[in-house]
Length: 182
Image (tube, rainbow, N blue to C red; front, side):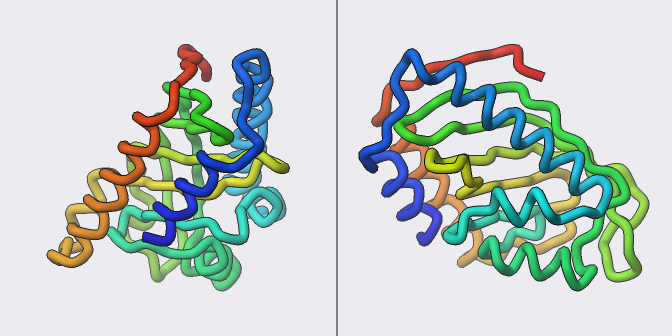
């Protein structure tokens, strides 16, 4: 619910992106995303620390929602570590004062406490970046590895509620699409 409230406040805030600004906004967010991906693939958290919004929520492939702070801590203490991390953006668009990126990410986990260590995992991602220094406010990653985590009824209801509310929000705002970004 926290992420839903966050998305609602982003879309109704005063800093809407005009149609003429949308291409520039998308380019800026795509560039930040690319820097974050390269940084994470090297094990460097500096870009993620800079772009993760203080109120960020991440819906991870383990079927759990975590705060941005919790995700950063998991990287710092080695609970999350990638030997390979890449994203292919298939869709990028503006909704209110948010830029949404969607596509595929390829991840190879490292570390002894990781599930699927050394195995290449392909998963779908959606991330929402809010205006005002382009901070990543929400991210969701899901793929085949999700099957190993049992989805409790409560977790399933929360995930469904999150995506229903996010979809309602996005459907309520005109969407400007820019396809073919890689």
